[in-house]
Length: 220
Image 1 (cartoon, one colour):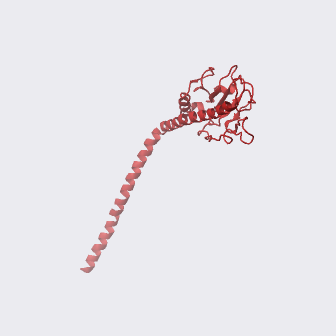
Image 2 (tube, rainbow, N blue to C red):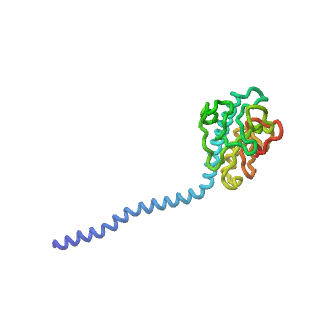
Image 3 (cartoon, rainbow, N blue to C red):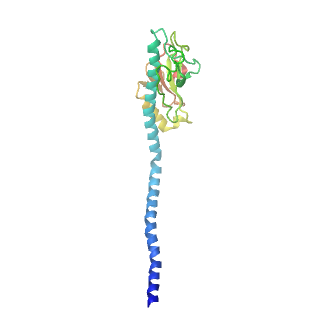
């Protein structure tokens, strides 16, 4: 009788284990199934989500950077440009332009001429992801004297391959350009030149408009 009871208890223990194991595995399998469904749904909409994310980022980053750079360049001229025939703007390489990050305000005291680190320091944000460094050209070249008939501008070009076929980039830069008066070509009046159909997707902001033929760097 005692042996029978022990056998019965042993049999119950053996048959109970698989049930308890099934209860633990069931919810796990259910969660995995749900995750699989979610992954499938997200993969369908991931393209649109990515386009919107890139466009929103560029729409926010580019105008903020452009306005800051323009303000710092204008600040230099306001301090050292005496009239319309005297150039107080930063100098640049007149052939290829100069990195905005390397600009100097020539009129400032030696050792404090860096536009971002000198007499009036400011933080220059890094380029937005996929976008190139900002460049500046002063077609008067030397600065601190004379005028720039070809104008003065800042620009950048996306670094990603084939940017004109990247919907996020084109949408974002189009929205960024819309924050200013803009044209798809140099119209001699707009703040920004940007052509959404342009192969390079060059984004240009004028500092001073040209009084003659615009420098090619300042055209989209």
